Picture 1: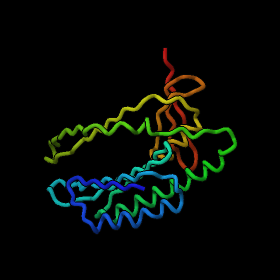
Picture 2 (picture 1 turned 30 degrees about the vertical axis):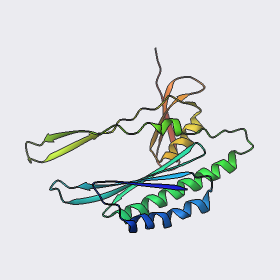
Picture 3 (picture 1 turned 120 degrees about the vertical axis):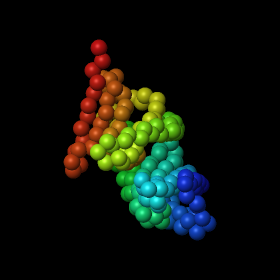
Length: 196
């Protein structure tokens, strides 16, 4: 498995690279179908410009499936530990779903098209609070991906793989733009737009 590590506002040491390589071996033990792991590490600063949280984003690719996880804690090692645990849990669930759906005519569609587009540069507006004189950054992350037709069940599967609380898709039965979302417990909701 190829491992790519990139850093933003942070130095990536050889020690951290070794740490990532060692911890990532657990993925291959669970599922050998993985091709590449992308690790993005960024250091966030607090309002005074001091060291804040280190944020780690993991993207695992293999056979057309993309699985993501992220975490932010006080240091990059702890953040990676939390993120890799989330990622491994999602890999296990994906592997279990493949076992269940194999032979049942269910086809796992790849998310490579949906995640091929990189995040656009964040748009940050600094709003000044008149009462406190504190700057509050508003960050808007935009992402575009091709419209994909799928069933509600497939959309829930994809939502769980990427680790989001919602997933936008085109319903293959109605042709309507729709979204599935996670509710409390193991329940999900679905919303569809009715076009004129």
